[in-house]
Length: 201
Image (spheres, rainbow, N blue to C red):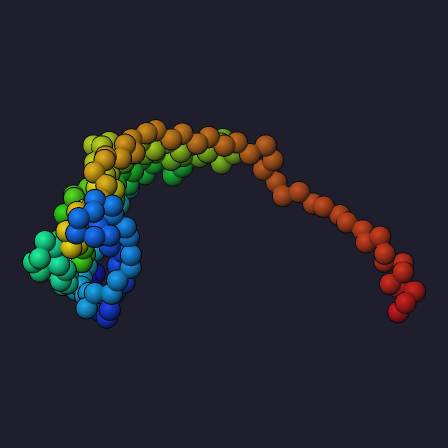
């Protein structure tokens, strides 16, 4: 499976930061229009099943185009970036299986913004037991501690700003649920005003 996508935005609105005067260190924010922003994306994906094993792979190439001013020079935001996602699941039994997923985002730019690479690798299992009354889901997320999607930098004028921390999305989630009743409940109701309605009719 392969498909392309083209986006064009005229006069995109961006939020910038700048000093209130050339002698001041006080920074204010404002919204401005840039000339244009566009990108061309190529996506490729495939899915295959081998007995109990299921594989799904996706890849994307992004070709951006834009221009911004920083420190009295114009820069092109046109760095090509690649993203990918891999999902693997294996059904051990009809009611129990394990899965893993890995997503990768390369260094990318979009007008004033640039973002460092990030990734997220997760492993989990899911199953149902006792005639589907008991369900169990376990997920271990961000095993490589690479899901730092907040590592952003914005450049415009004479100001460089952004978020430079690292997210720690590592964790283990366990979800267990048990259904006490396995049959649908039959509920019989009676309208209190049925006699009044009958007399009106």
